[in-house]
Image (cartoon, rainbow, N blue to C red; front, side):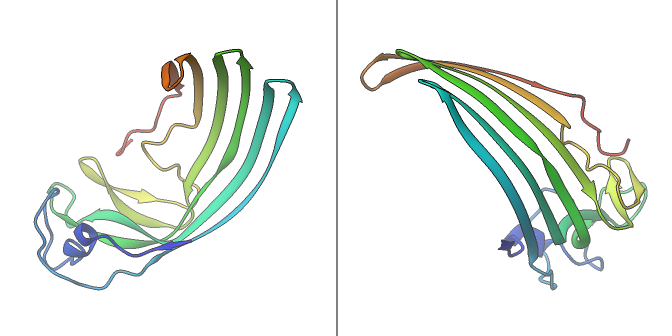
Length: 173
């Protein structure tokens, strides 16, 4: 997989012309495409009528990921730049039941999202030294999801979801 830099990332990617986010476009320097390689293996097991279990293991490595960097320790100005490598890997599991017009499900995700290179990034109010293996801020390690859907009549479904996430590292901590 690959993606090209977005317009806002390109418009704020020059350390000589830093910008405050969100901002208008200012310059047009070069940013490399993000290259993502993913390996994934999983299984689907319909173990009983109306019941299934899904399990997935995955690992994605992003080369030249695009991250925001600051121009000073105290200022809010910065620019987008390529970061050598990041990694997202984990496990997703789901158990689902269909009982007549009702669908019930429970899902769990474990995510290990880390930087895979050393560097300095703007994190909150200051710059932070990133070492290989540092967790990426803002992404929970554990997620639990409960779902319930009721097909009231043909074409009408009422549903509810409950989502619980573990604590997240805050940018700058």
